[in-house]
Length: 277
Image (cartoon, rainbow, N blue to C red; front, side, top):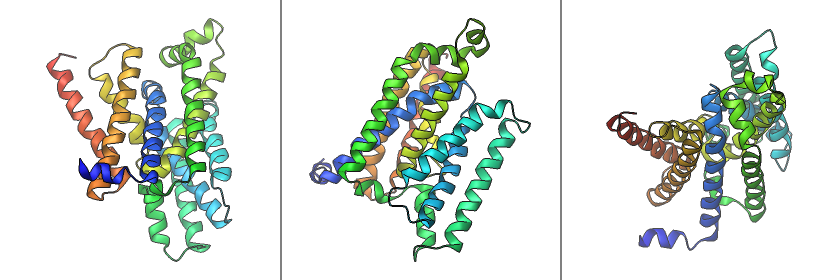
């Protein structure tokens, strides 16, 4: 406890913890919808695509990478979640093309137009998370908080619509709901979450923040509301515990959070089995 209090005397550690918990909360809210709609894989596809956009921003030496990464990721999300349904290349095939293509092109660009003497280190940090989460400025924290609050408000405001689109999209469309608009909102918000979470856990394991808390909550709760609330609590607690553990034992932040989520899933799985869920 004394070590924890010592580290939290530093403002940048407190900033990083707040950002970590907010990102985990946002990912968990829409994670339930993505899991139930069988879109769990979207996290990997978008994060790999975002890595390609990050590489382009690095080559162009753009000061604020979000200017490039966020619009590109949003466009890919809309294509994969919405337009991809009517395309000749469907679902998993379109995802594989975008994912592998963007990841390969991004790595190629970083090698051909290298802007750093440590390409391997930069790539590894982008794929598995980096200590840059501990070097956030006040501007970064404010931007993250604004985007996170916007995501949470969208979820609360469109809760009933998201519920309808999640469980029976065809019926929702039949009774006059504008399902395409709500799917677009889900796509855009998912892209924002992915871009925010990449700095925390990296491109390769970002989908863990979306999948594990939702799957853990589904082991013990039946209702959509109950699963959503439990998912949010699990995500925030796992993020906080993983972050603190990484600080104390000098471990990578992203993998530490994912490991805590895995342990949480195993625990809830056992609880669900004992309760006959």
